[in-house]
Structures are given as structure tokens and as C-alpha cells.
Length: 169
Image 1 (cartoon, one colour):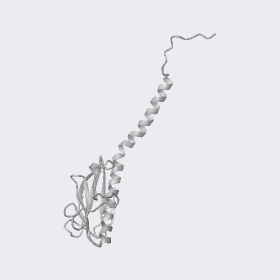
Image 2 (cartoon, rainbow, N blue to C red):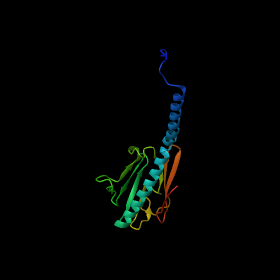
Image 3 (spheres, rainbow, N blue to C red):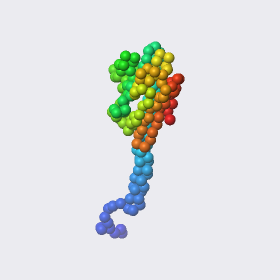
Image 4 (tube, helix red, strand yellow):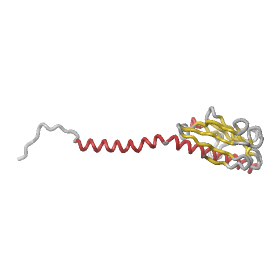
């Protein structure tokens, strides 16, 4: 005959508790590096976006035969693509929206800061009908640099003066 044990309190064994703690530790070990690398991923995304938008402005200038420009606002962490008259153009993908990129309002880029822009004169870079980069006053570009940062990471987008070749460092 089996005896019933009346005084046993239901609960977890030490082995069960250890397994749960190991699983929680593994999840934390995976999640923490992913969270800390979010800023570096956003930084790479922002640099690539700026480089592609510079290329787009250059190709629009060549294909349309007129000057296109990108105007940066470092205080607002934003920039816009404009035609030769200074009007913001429509975005080619986002229907009925202006071609304005605002890092602070975009959850994919909100950790990124536009630290500085160097285009000779002002915060505007222009491309003429030949695709030649110009400073904000319309003179040939001597130096084209956009510095971005996110937490402790920094990236630089450079525009070559004569050719308009764009690189990310």
C-alpha cells in the first residue's frame, strides 16, 4: 500500500529555477548588444541615405539640365532637396510628400545627429547641369563634408570637389 504524503508543499525544484535563470541570462546576453548597436546601425543608415540623396540630386541636375541643391539644417537634424528656384521637390517614392528628411521625427534615424556640414559657403550643396558640385553661393566646391554622430560613433560623408564622387567613411 502506498502512503499519502500530506505535508508536501507544491513548488519549484532547484533544477527548474536554475534552468529558468539560465534562459533569462541567455536572452539578456543577446538583447543588450542588439540595443547598444542600434545607434551604429542608425548611423550607417543615415550616412547611406544622405549619400544616395546626394546622388539623386546630382542625377536630377544632369537629367533635367538645371541646378538642384540639398539644404541642411543641423539644428533641426534635417535636410531637403530643392530645385533651382529653391522650392522643395516632391519625393519620388512617398506620394504627395516633400523631399524632406527629418532625423528627429524618424524612428529609424532619431539617434543620429548632423554634427556639421562643410561646403565652403553655408549649409547648401548644389549640383549643376553637368553634375559638378557647387557651394551654397554657386562657386566650385572646394570641400564637401557632412559629419554625423550617434552616441559615441561618428561617420563622414564626403563629396569630391570636381567629380562629385561621394564616399562614406
